[in-house]
Amino acid sequence: MTTQSKPETRSALVFPGMAPIRFADVAKFMLINSHARRLLRIADEALGYSLFDRYRDADADGDYSEYAQVAFFVNCVALGHWAEEVHGMSPDVIAGPSFGSKSAAVFSGVLSFTDAVRMTASMARVENDYFAREYRDAVTLSFTRTPREQLDEVLAELNDRGEWYDLSCHIDDDFYMVSLDGGSVEWMEKQLRSLGGMPLYTMRPPMHCSAFGALRDRIDEEVLAGLRFADPALPVVADQDGAVLTTGEQVRQMLLDGYVLPVRWPAVVDTLKERFDVGRMYVCGPDSLFGRVGVTTRNFELVQANPRTAMRPRRAVVAV
Image 1 (cartoon, rainbow, N blue to C red):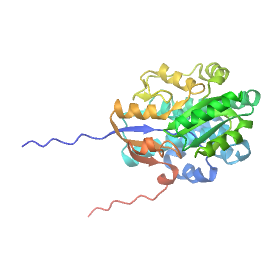
Image 2 (cartoon, rainbow, N blue to C red):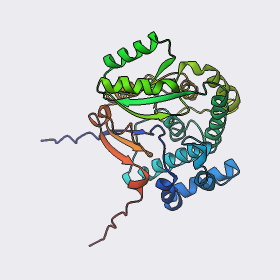
Image 3 (cartoon, rainbow, N blue to C red):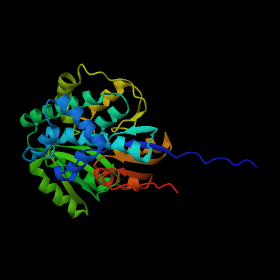
């Protein structure tokens, strides 16, 4: 009787969106991990300054300073290489919600690491300049335990009040992010709590908002012009709608659309499950969100590759 071998589990590599990370939580990884050290050297040469030193001294510049953003990007790419080395990761498809799209572009072969380092730094500078002039009071509020029906009630009240807002992220069935004027945050938090919701983090500057078309255009003209976008070696799943991207131009468009379209993580999950039959997900980067929400944990075997797991001592294999 012939025994059929069990098919290998298909896997996805996911680079997470950026959350506030303390320098102290990643400094040891950046100094000791061989992949991080190698990429830091390349980043320093591309930037013309010591990224580690600037990141260490940038506390006063906020959670999303140029140095924090580039360091997060470098660490994510380093953790992707670490997962290849330690876990034998060989993904069938790549995704990178929100900020993770930059790392996804590199790991899929669309952008060189050096170009992506310079791109990330330049994007941060343009963003900082834009929000110093436009939408200066806008923020993005994240919250959970709020089903869409209840969220719609709150948004309808915002609309009745004549307040500006936009849905920026759909993370899970009851987990969303909304961009709005900072002066309305306290009111919205109160409304969410009254419905059983739980407000979490208020992000400044805001992102993923249809009102930021001028910012998207500046990034297109001032940052992406002149960069070479090769076709990806692996398919990339767009974080806005779960579309499968197979050309460099499509990935370029995804990076730009991230400024004006919301992230829809359940759509990405649907594509990974239905189109690619993914069973295992490698989340490579300091992640406090995308690899932890229910829509992810219910559907995949999770392998977390973050600075903490990468710094754990590995058991030596002893021949007997």
